[in-house]
Amino acid sequence: MAMKVTILGSGTSMGIPMIACQCETCTSSDPKDKRTRCSIIIEVDNKKILIDTTPELRLQCLNNNITDIDTCLITHTHADHIFGMDDLRGFTKAHSKMLEVWASNLHFDKLYSIFGYADIKNTAGNRSLPQVVFRQFDSQKPFTAAGIEITPIELPHVTFESIAKMNTIGYRIGSFAYCTDTCQMSDSHIDQIRGVDTLILGVLRQRPHAAHLNIEQAIEIGIKSGAKNVYFTHIGHNIMHARDQKTLPDGFWLTYDGMEITVE
Image (cartoon, rainbow, N blue to C red):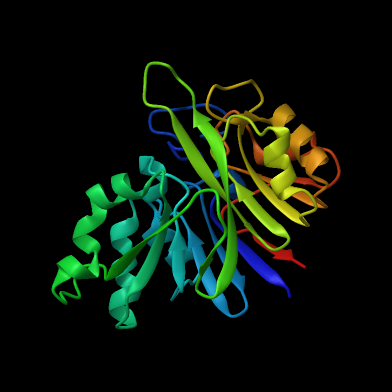
């Protein structure tokens, strides 16, 4: 069954252009260098699955004509991945419905502590608030959301000793996998995505980084996975689309906001 993936946002946590930056990428006129925070929509079996609710969610949905979704998955609770959650009320109000939001056992409590007001148990039917049912899944076990089987992949992200460590959740749906915000993928992680047709990886820049993959690491992971097409997202301002796409091997692609990917 064909699957369509729309890149709602392809940028890192500060977005591109970044505030107060006058670098070559941040001042670029190329629309592919204008990146909102990282998020996607997956369309499969007549269902639309949103992954992450970025601060630009409203604009991302307007720009891509997203008028409804069936469920939402959260990768982790950093601000750039969840702080647009209140905009889910656009869908729940327009369609007079509730939405399930899925978070792993690693992130559920933190997510609920911020957005618990949106739980339908707390909204008293007030349609000006999101009407959300929060669902928790085990980061080590497959689960079903909107009738679609989803396999979570627990990935290392923040490893700084000075702040709380955090793992994130990648997602595999059939022959597609989405793994953003990770600093490394071991052989056991790669086994979980091996054989996918299409893989999206979070890639910050060319140089190594403590919390994110760089281009060299991501290419190695993509090759090991056996994916036919590997796409990079969560892109920082060290990368320019037109310039750096030319440096990638065949089958590797930089994403951009609004990009549509077909997965067989």
